[in-house]
Length: 226
Length: 351
Ligand SMILES: Nc1ncnc2c1ncn2[C@@H]1O[C@H](COP(=O)(O)OP(=O)(O)OP(=O)(O)O)[C@@H](O)[C@H]1O
Ligand SMILES: [Mg+2]
Image (cartoon, rainbow over all chains, first blue to last red; front, top):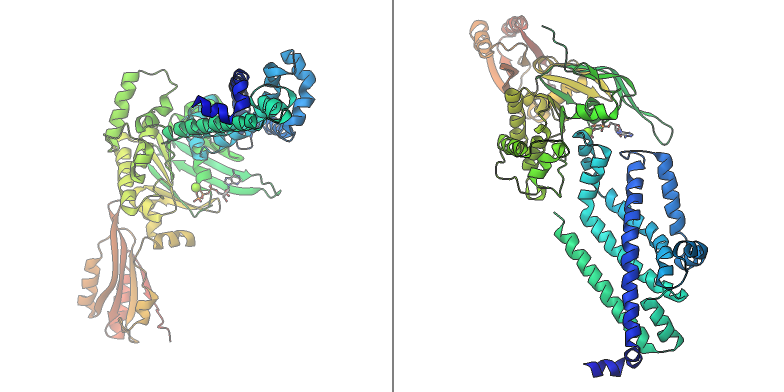
């Protein structure tokens, strides 16, 4: 087995500890960014849903500002966003490179997408159910908790899965600017040193990670759906 | 005896703003008085404004003019926290049941009091009692997706009753159900009205629902109440064409043109086709035998449709009178003096 891997992936075997280290960095980035972005996106998405016209706390001005902001950030290509954010990243993280330097741009990059995903999950909740919340005398906060969030848990899991997969794509892009992770490994060894086996190893490990996330997401989304 | 009504609409107007600049008036000068413990029906075609009207009672919609009061308190000026406590007095059920799919039947019924400081054990008992009342004692742990439409509506009724409301608003509550299930749900609602004294407000587009269930009816047409009153008197003597059309949907007293065109009746020139309708619930059969005996005419019953509404007979007969012209005239004169509506129908045979 070992010899097969050595035969097919000689360069990866030579740099095995660096390779596994970069896999670890990808996990680190994905987990930190997704947790922080989930919280921010959830708050923004709830804000969008309740302040919209006909929302339970309709505030058209607030909705407009939120909506425009999300659109603005969504329209900037991620690679340009990283460059544009460098001064702010330095200020916040103390550095603009390495894993530490990628967290902030990744959050800014993924949150608008995540927000839209959660927003659409919340909007899938039948308006009749929201009306029931009002009719039985729940407060707006109680409606958010016991109707919007409770009823959209399977959808939120589904869109979180989609977002995690996109996020893994973004963590590979930050490799281009020396951000660490699998993408960084693929560029340094696979692309710059022309070691094709390194590139393939990166692809295989990414496919495995994405498949596992997808499987877990589908499992929980199904399990919680009645 | 004139009690203060539980719910009162005075000159209620509702205008929805519209994107294309054309505001849409959905309610026009609506005046209603609904007495406590009564069953009040509101009928109208789709888009007449029924849902908008009933939603003004619990403040989900705000009138743009006029006032709505509940137990003497103005609903349309209540602040949101007061409005929420008012809503605990007003249950509501819907056409699409609107149960929370992710919650069990038990959790659905508990939802209205979930955030209240309550005695859990008492609440549990109450849910059990309500489930028995609506006929689903063994469904507490089922999910809505495992229930039939009728069962879902029963759960929705139990949920609406958890707060012991004074009123239950029913917005097309039986429109998604088959006829038998509709009957069962209406029977349950009537039973709740009798046993608990809960006031029912029933919105529907089916006159049969009104006929089966309600004490009072208001007919809504394009946002205006065109006719209202006691169900029996409206059924016996509908003034507006729309009301007459709604009532015709529940009556089989209209003679279809095919029967007239066919040779089944075989009407000859001197025969008269006569429609008799009850006006105050007097027995009719003696009339028929009376005229045949005393005026020497044959009275042949072609169609009959008689039912009991509020303990009084409602409906009538279509008969063919045959005999000497003078005898028929005498019989008609006699009938004309009775407390019935008499229509001598000139059914022209086509061709
Ligand atoms: N929020 C709203 N904004 C604009 N127009 C509305 C709104 N709600 C209802 N309407 C309009 O008001 C009219 C009456 O609506 P409503 O739902 O009260 O009718 P309805 O009698 O209950 O009809 P249905 O039998 O179809 O339920 C409709 O033409 C509808 O388009
Ligand atoms: Mg309606």
